[in-house]
Length: 268
Image (cartoon, rainbow, N blue to C red; front, side, top):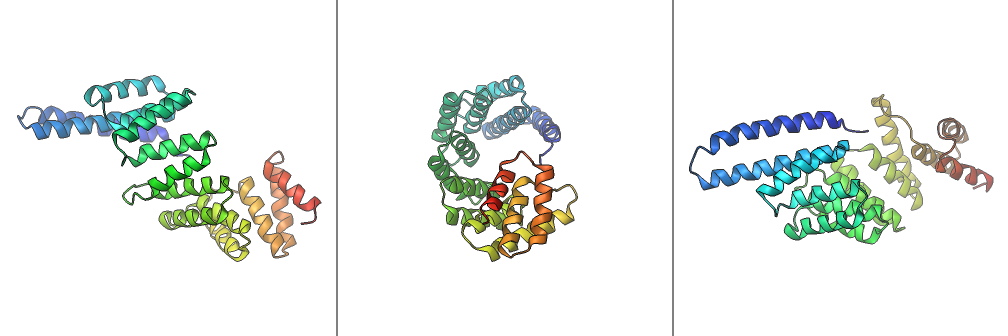
């Protein structure tokens, strides 16, 4: 489910206006500490707004805000990480990597930048390096989106054909998110790979329960194939037939439907 970027931008704009108003008040004082704090807030808001504009595809506006941020603080790790996102959007992988690496040199503890860096490495197929980046990021217990870091770590472990480690990462994501649907599905999938069908069925049922409570959620090709595999293991062929029909009708050109046909043709 996609977040509404427009709403996020509106909130960020409002936040920046408040900071700007406060800045006008603070700068009338002679407090060096107050001025420094105000500058840090302004830089943070410029970076937040630039990141939101990158998400919208408005690179020109994003660059404008990052230019302002770097005028105030040329060594700001967040600004360099956001510039890395711009280069990624513009399909300049070498420049993107350089910007993200600089961000981490400036602040090795900047977890958001490390997550961005891990995503860049993952997109380039450098899965071992991506795993290392996500593993470091996952150790930051104060990072507010830590559940997604563990999910990304699970994805990299799957790409490295390490299903047991992927299951550990997905389990932490489920625990921290209190049942994120994508993490539940991933955990069911790798449990099948690990031949732990009882666990797979348990996590899959939790996913189905979430879907029943939320009418905006629907099956993906992956969730249908996972359900088919579980049903086949327990010889529930009525369930297999109903899920296979959905898979054929909704996702006839998907890799998952091709995998299902391979399963049935081999009589597995």
